[in-house]
Image 1 (cartoon, rainbow, N blue to C red):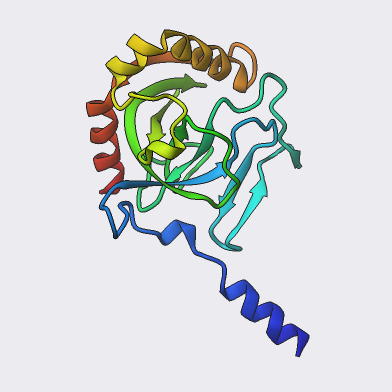
Image 2 (image 1 turned 135 degrees about the horizontal axis):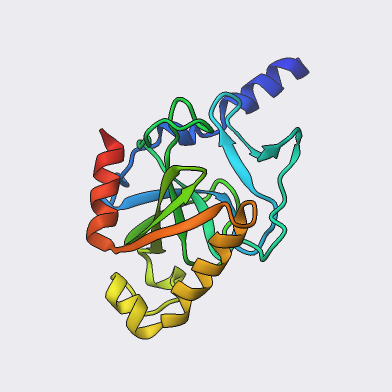
Length: 193
């Protein structure tokens, strides 16, 4: 009886990997939060178990040794990036949502405002920068474009640059460039194919 209950509860867990890219109600881009803002313990969604697990490096939980995550890190469902040595089958499009901390498994409707292009060990990674679409969830009022972010909050880009440069092994990550919301939207469309 207990085994049936556990099996029933496990099957009730949402399959975040197969959520639609856009919300059904408002047709806005969605993000699944894996790692909440303000933590140093990186999590990743495991589609096989439908659980959020600690990211592993060399068999141990990966803990960011610099500053905590500057935003809610996750992915855009229904998307896949180009395969890399770290992710041979690709992975969902990464996104950093600039908002108050949200728990792992939160699904937010978002507005893409920029694209960060990184290079690590010769591999390019593109990360969508976004804000929540609901004004009540926004911590950066009046920011819905890259130009607005730079105009109203110029220190955000410098803070993100510093964090991403120190997120991995020191000196291994390089910022290739920053792009606007149009490039971010184009990247999402590309990752949907």
